[in-house]
Structure formats: C-alpha cells, structure tokens
Image 1 (cartoon, rainbow, N blue to C red):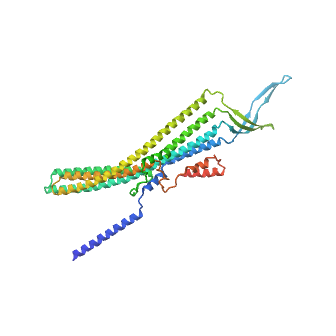
Image 2: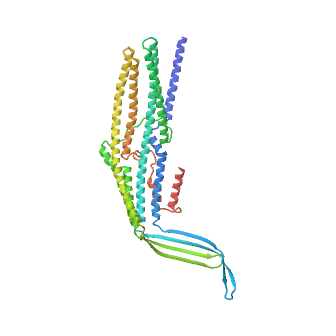
Image 3: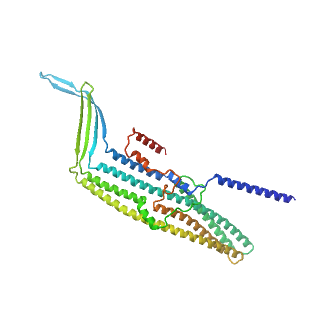
Length: 480
C-alpha cells in the first residue's frame, strides 16, 4: 500500500514537472520571436557602414552640381585694408635752407568687386551637365553596393543557420557514438566482440569530438560575421522562407540584366561624362566674356582727404598660345571617352556572364540538394540494416561505424546544399540587378537619393528657406 502511494506520488510529481516544462516552453515561444531572414536584411541595410560611406560620396557628387550652378551666377567679393605710411622727406628751399617733411599717414581702403560670366563657349554649362551625369553614375554604384551588402547578409544568415545545424548534428552523433562505445564494451566483457572493436568505437568517438569542436568553431566564426554584417548577435533564427521568385527563362533574365543592371547603367553614365568632357575641352578654345565692376573708397585718417572710384565694363579673355596644352587636353578627354566605352563593353559582357553563372550555380545546387536527399534515404536504410545485422553477429562494429559515418556525411551534405541553394537564388537576384531593399519589399525606409539632391541642386545660400532646410538635414545626418 505504501509502495502504491509512493508510485502515485511520483507520477503526480512527474506530471507536475512535465506541465511546468510545457508551460515554460509555451511561455518562451510566446515571449521570444524568432528572427527572420527579412529582419537580418533590414538590420544590414540600416547599420551598414559601407552604405553610409557611399551615400556620403553621393551627396558629395550632388554638391558638384551645386558648384557648377554657382559658377553661372554673379560673383561678388569685398576687400578692405588699412595702412600706415611713415618716413621723412628732405628738400631745399629757394633761399638755400633745408627742410624736412614728416610723411606719416594712415589710410584705409574698402572695395567691392563683381563679375558675371556671359559667355565661355558653353564650358561651364557642360560642366554642370557632366556633374549631373556623375551623380546618376554614383547613384547606380550605390545600388550595386546595396546589392552586395544584402547578399552578404543572406550568406551570413544562412551560415549561422547551417552551422547551428552542424553543431546539433555533431552533438547527436557524439551521443550515439558514446552509446555505441558502451555497447561495444559490454559486448567485449561477455566475449561477443574483440578488443579491436572497442578500439574502433573509441577512435570514432574521438573523431566525433574533433568534428564537434570544428563545427563549434565554425559557428563562432559565422556568428562574428553575422554580428558584423547585421549589426547584432544572432538570436533564435527562423528557417529560411520560400525561395525568391526568379525568372525561369535564362535568356529573358540576361536580356533584362544587360539593360537595367546598376553596374551597366553606371558605366553608361560614365561614358556620358567623358563625352561632355570632350566638349568642355573644346570649349576652352573659345573666348570668355564677363561683365565686371568694382567700387572702391580710400580715406586718409590724418586729414579730410578721400577718394571714391568705380568701374563697370565688359572683359574679354581668350587663349592665343599655351604650348599645345589645350589640344592635349582634348586628346586626353577623347582617350578617356574611349576607355569608358571599352569599360562599358566589358561591363555588359560581365553582367551577361554573371547572370549565366548565377543560373548555372542555382541549377547545380538544386541538383546537389536532390542528390543529398536520395543519399540520406539510402544511407539511413543501410545504417539501420547494418546495425540490425550486427546484433545478429553478421556485421562487425567497424561496419556499423562506417554506415553511421556515411549517414552523418549525407546529412551534413544536405545542410550545406540547402544553404547553398538559397545563396545561389539570391545571387541570381544580384546578377539581374533585383537584390535591393525596394525589390525585396523590406520593411525599412528606403534611402531616397533625390531628397538631398533636390535641396542642393540650385546651390541655395544658408539664409534662404531652402538653405535652412538643408542645414537641418545636415544636422540630422551628423547625429546619425
């Protein structure tokens, strides 16, 4: 009776523990939301120093447009000076007496000068257009860098997921081999196996410990990469979502990429810049016409003397001979244009090749994943069969360990193949120019390259309403 009561109490205690564990699991599941791949991409987009760097470079390019606009506007300068003259002057009068005159005096001068470019053969206007093309090229380069950042985040996420699975797989394998060693030792004690079988089990267990240590080291490295790319330590990670939508037709994807890829568009704008630079170099041969004016006031502080003067006129300047420098500049601009055209051709070929390579890699990784699934199925059947035969004495311990290692290798191969399929799919998006925060519809405020450009393109002065708005934007950027 007492024993029955004890058993009943133990069952109640176990049920209570099980309920408590269940409540803890449910509470933990509700309180902690697993991080998704989209969350990792958002983190990389928000915290990337590389993106911040190139956004700042884009703003610098925007300012080049403002500088070109300012060169077409009136230029007004002031100058001011104060001088103290001193000395003596000795002279002889008509009667033969020498006299000395003190020449000390203090004079002040203040002046204004103004100039306005009227004509320079279009060189300054062409400079503005070249600056605009540079802005457009820099924007496309920023998109290309954004794609690289996001693909790196995808890779970092999947590496953490896969290396965690590797560690779990190795831990399970270690537990199984520990059991195998115990079983081999028990069978050795009763004379069913030899000392060699026990040694083989010990060797496999030692190898499993080494494999686990390697997997744990790989996980630490994957965690560091994730922290670097995403900006935080990975918590609980959700399994990857379904693969992104990809055009099944390679040639359609290739055709679209060679028209819209950011690398190609950047190269096209760079060609446009060099063509404008040729026109600018030729325009330097033309005369420059400017309206000029000045106003000056000079006053002698020692007396009431002063002078006022002003000039207004048209100034014409132009080259006559510069030792062939201008002609050299034109030829240099043409050579730069030819170089950028060659670069455009290479970029087009590279984009086309990258699309083909990305599709080939995806197809290969998908086939590898399918083969891994078949390998696991066959290896599991073989392992279970060998283990059963070993209990009947038809197989040795080494046969069991070999079959188990084959199953472990097959499961490891599948984990790698699953991660590689996802990375290859997102690499296809990058190759076709569609791996951006906008294309992926990430829940993040997408950086607008027009926002800053619209504020500075007219070269506002600080006192204007637009200049004050720009100042607020700059302060907010500094805080970040």
